[in-house]
Length: 304
Image 1 (tube, helix red, strand yellow):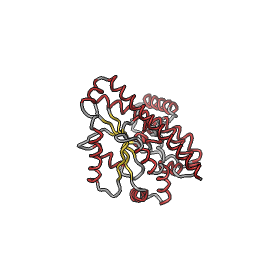
Image 2 (cartoon, one colour; image 1 turned 30 degrees about the horizontal axis):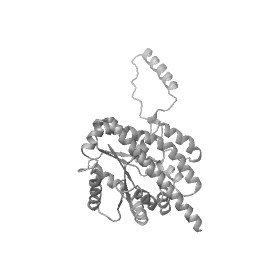
Image 3 (cartoon, one colour; image 1 turned 90 degrees about the vertical axis):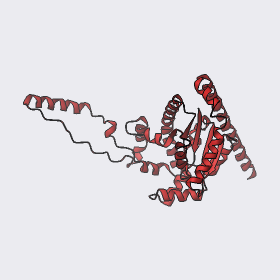
C-alpha cells in the first residue's frame, strides 16, 4: 500500500486537493491530521489534560464555557420509603462522582491557544514546541491505527493529509510527497479572505509559524523525481487544479498500482519488507537534506 503525503502551508489550496483526491475518479481514503489533532485534545483525553496543566496557569481563557447540564428527569417515588431510598442513593451517587465526565468538561478555546503559540518571538516558539510535543505523538498513534485499517481493507493508496509534515518527522514514512504551494502574497490574501476575524498581523504570524513555503518546496523537490512533487496553485480554478492533480496521480500510479500492489497486499511479508525499504529511503532523504542545509549555512557564514 502506498502512503502519499499531502502537505502545504495555510491557505495554499491543500484542502481543495484533499477533496479532489477523495472524490472520483481517484476516490482515495484520506487520513486528515488536522481532524485527528482535534480529536486527540477533546475533553477527557490525555493530551487535553496535559495542555491544561501546562498552559492554563498563564492563559486564563484557555477553556470555553462549559455547556449547561441537561435537567434531571428522575421520577419521584410514590411512597415515603421509595423517596427516602431515592434521596439516599442520590446523595451517595453525587458524592461518588465528584470527578467530571468528559462530556461535562469544557473544550479548549482554540483561538486563545492560537494567540498563545503563533508568532515569531522566542516564547511563542517555545510554547509551540511544547504544544507539538503533546499533540504530535497522539496524532501519530491515531494515524498508525487508520493506516492499518485501510491496509486490511485493501486500499492501494492512502493519502496522509499533514500540514506540518516535515516538522512532525512523518515524511520518512511517505514514499511520495505531494506539496501544494503558492506565493506568499497569494497565501496571505487567501488567509485574510477566509478567516476575516484575523488581523493582518495575526495572519502574518500564522503564516510565519508554519515556515517559509520556499524552504518546503526545495525540500520536497530534493526528494527526487517521483518521490517529491510540487503543484503550484496561484489563481487556478478548481478544474485546472483537478487537471494538475490528475496528471500527478497518473505518474504516481504507474508501476505502483497493479500486480505489484496485489503481491504486496496478499503476501504480507512482501508488503512489510517494501514498507521498511521505503522508510529507509525516507530516512536517507532526510539525512541528505539536513547535510546539504548545514553545508549551505556554513558556506553563508564563510562568505560573511
